[in-house]
Length: 315
Image 1 (cartoon, rainbow, N blue to C red):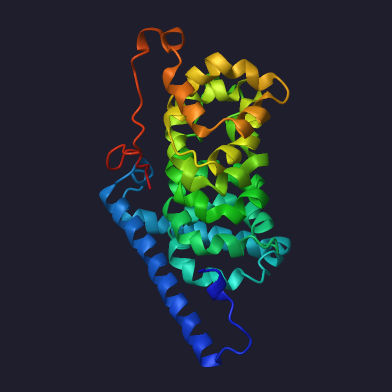
Image 2: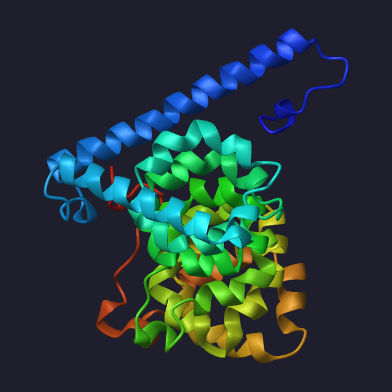
């Protein structure tokens, strides 16, 4: 609804339109300024790993200033990049300037791909701009993965709001080791990309499952299981599946039934015909000792309550 309100009908009163746009500008500028003030406060208190590298607030301001000068200088010396700023949505960045100023040193190395893939009349800024302050607030967490995000921005941009809403759960999958994913740190995400719309459109339902599935990531990556399961996830949730036990016991399900995923048509028929209660029954009743050994009595909390700040990441 918020995005619809941005478009005013032709017969709208010009004064009303101006008032609405002015109110939006003031609100956005206020939120953006709050991002900058919170960043200054974290720098002063040295809260968070990335804020300890600044000797003082003065040092932080100096670094941001020098970064800004370098960015402007590079733009002026590269007319082709400067021309990419000629995007119909570029003016919408103005009220976000305070938040942008708070991240100039981190943004500097990403300016070129941002200009070419987000601006440059790519039509992505319209999807991203309403959430820009929140992105910049969490930029220390997002920035290490920004090159991959920009490589897939065409797919990800339309879902910016939902992805940010569940950023803590999603970031659990951003850091993987060689044991989990081999040489490709984004193997899980790469398998999900073709079915991103399926997952993101139901991310409010899928989100609680993500922390529980994380320990089973190596098993899910084997034999393209994510690719096989993804087309059927929507069918399961459409039937009203809300139980978290299958995610908590995914290792058990894959131990007994993983082979069936590789048999043509079996996954399709199972998810089409089996009621959600069957999945829960199998997840809870299949013997666990063969799978987990002495840890067979270990269970995950599946009530969605991990305690306050269970996954607070540095800002």
